[in-house]
Length: 246
Length: 246
DNA sequence: AACAGGATTGCGTAAAATGCAACAAGAATA
DNA sequence: TATTCTTGTTGCATTTTACGCAATCCTGTT
Image 1 (cartoon, chains in turn yellow, orange, green, red):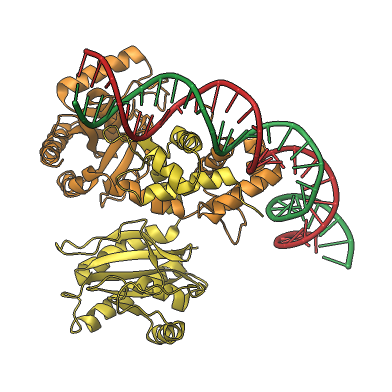
Image 2 (tube, rainbow over the protein chains, first blue to last red):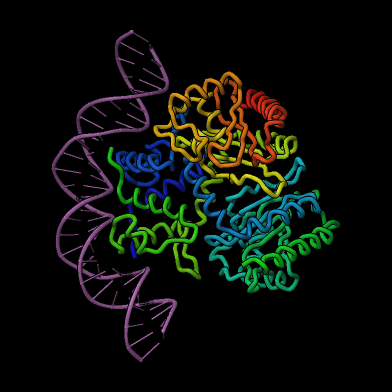
């Protein structure tokens, strides 16, 4: 089935805008999309009409509009995992002192659906809506190891630590399965360490992952056993809770 | 300028899906949109390709997809007010014991862009992404009274308390301006009371509103002076902070 | 296995979208 | 303030796409 071209163009514009914090002009959009200025203008005007784009008064550049925030609420409200996990995230942050994150598999990535931030000054920013690769984040590796997701087609290197060999990754995921948790040692973000465990539902199916992340200066090898134990324990409690939520 | 019809149809589908927590079938979409099933199927398939819709395995009904969560993050990340307000929201919740909310004007409504929930069992659910009418919510009335928003064309009655007469609302907003804060006394949600104040930027322009909401059983007339004083004080502190953030 | 209902898909054609160019609007410069 | 430049909007003829119809496929139920 071929796609509806005009709709696809509109969606591509949204994607472009999401990566352009300073906004975009009609002329730039037209070039990037490979269409006439007139077409770009009409597409943007249609998006604006429904709240998906708006124009910054000062810079006069187009940006994403508020409607996607409203839609996002609908998506998040649909996830029982999110409500159930909130107290556990808070507990995890309080127990470890690091940021606690909750993720699900979406579009071949780890979509962060909630977080509880650490009060520490130096911390990992991973806001709701963040989409990170599976192969080099703890939350993502857990989804690969315990879930149904296929290995990513390409294993992009983000740091010298990133596992980019499919065979090596398969081995690593076997180890993750054996241990029951995953660790990310600067594989995605230099100087950041993460630990994560899977969340299972009443059928034993992996429906998400929960974990912590922090700077390597605080998530030290000496602390790992204690942090890992906390993540495992709190993750297990959340899985047990999800076992009663169906 | 006429809209790009196919794009508009796709966006209308997103809107429909955001109001259908149980999901929607292609056939239902076709009926609601007034198009052929084949067209509906192709539109949905295009949306699915870009992550905007997905199909629930069990019910086989279409739902909003994860991409809007990712886009939402971009919008929220753009708002300096949000980061600045977080500690103030927390303080407001801790001082009053009620849920604290932050809103901006978007598409003629109050868009809730952050909240800190009260630990109380009975509380007001207003998640990020909530869009409430301006004329009958405290956060919204503040945006009307102190901002540039035009009065809503229609003043819909949500409860017997809702102000539906334009003249009465104009008077009320003058009073809000005089007092420096707004109150919502069950005008939107029966049994819910809210208090809100404007947030001003370095130019003295209203860029949002901050407030608390709680059940009338706890937000009692006896408590109002104390709660109002807290909202005013913390709101002023946030405005002062925004005055240094440009 | 048979049936019903929902979804997908090929194809001709009607309708929509496009690109071009003229013009309007806004910003920058002298 | 006037002029020039740049960006965005819009009418219209043409090109292209999306549509609707109908046949077929897929899934779930009995």
